[in-house]
Every structure is written in C-alpha cells, then in structure tokens.
Image (cartoon, helix red, strand yellow):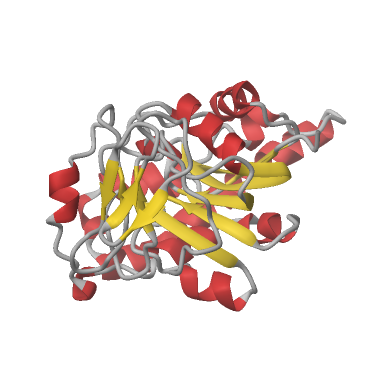
Length: 285
C-alpha cells in the first residue's frame, strides 16, 4: 500500500509527532524512535517499548500463503445481521482492526471500501503491523472500523476501544463481533456479555450502541466440547442441527414472553449467544 497521502501515522512511543517516512521505514522527529519494515513484505511495524509484542519476532516472521485460512473472516461476516449493520454506515475509509489472514479484504474492496488492514503479524493482505492498544494512526482518519472476533483477544479492551474511538471521524462507526459464550481459544482474555460490551464502548465515548446475537452457545460450546465435532466434515454435518435446536429454543422463549404481552428482554435475547454482533457510533460533535 502507498502511504504517501493516507493514512497519516503518529509515533506510538511518545504520541507527540507525525512520523516521517525513510528508506527503511518510519522515524519520529520528536523522540527519534525508528520503526522498521518487515524485510520480505515491506510492511511497516509500529510497536512501542511498552507493548508485549516482540518486534524481533515480528520482523523474522515467515509469511506462508499456503497456511492462510481465508474462509474464517467470511464466516464471521455471514453471521446474523453483521453485513446489514455494515450497510448502515457511511463513508468508505475503513480500518480493519485485527484483520487476521485477510480473507474479507477482497469483498470489502469490491464493495467500494478503501481499506487499511492491520494485525500483530505480517501477511499478504496486511498493510501495517501494530498493537491494537496503541494504534499508529493520527486522530479522525477513518469513517469505519471493522473488527470481527478480535475483542476477546485484547488484554485491555477498554484501552483498545478508546484508540478506535480516537482514530474514527466524528459520526464514524465501529462494526464487528466478539465472543461471549464461547470456549477459550487462541489466547482469548475477555469473553463479554452484552453489558460488558456496552460498558467498554460507552467508557470509550461511543454513543449509539446496537447489539445482536451472533452464533449460539449451542453451536460454540457444544460444538467445541465434543471431540468428534473437531473433525471438519462431522462439524459441517452437525452444525445445522445445533443451529436448529437454538432457533427452536429461542422461538419458545419468544412465545412465552408473547403470551405475557411482553417483548423478549436482552438478558434472554442476547444471553444465550456464543458471540455478539455490535455497531457503535462516535458522536458527531
């Protein structure tokens, strides 16, 4: 990606200055911190001395395209109304927060979005390597931030949400998903309920917050617990049955509350979700 015009980078070490491009990466004119590029991919690496990320390990990371899983990102976007929630946003400049292997990049760009993708390791569809708790982007750079299945892997989701809020333009939108009733996976820290996610986003300064259930606890916990479901073919066969059981259960809950003349409460509507889908808007002030 050509960074000559957009986005603008700031120093994650001192947070005082916009970075200057050099032949081998970027440099901060205020504190002198140098940010190198991955030798093979030329992807810039923005890691402060405070971050638990290992810069040497990142720079020596070997990119193996054959090992990429390009379907996982699309499976997240095909959960519930997540794509419809993205459609409710405005603007085209998007930050993919924790882009992973980048399987969703192609369809997002085909949809007309201008993407900057970052993760904690370099890959063929990654533009920047950085720590999501210390974003190297200047304020108000993006119309939209997308983040699917990342928040549970953050050791400080409150700090990361503040950073997302900072780099969004006024009126900008965060859209994504996070684990709730899922098993521990891939160094996950905080699996959040609807109240937890709401607290994280409100403390960061977001206004309008919209939440929906993603996949169900029957699919996530039941699916992971039984050994045979870890075989892809078996899981593919049994997943529709697990989904059907959840839908039947939720229909019974809705029927029970309907008989009382009451809408189904969030503690039930969202309380049995394996993952939660979210849309949070930065106030336009």
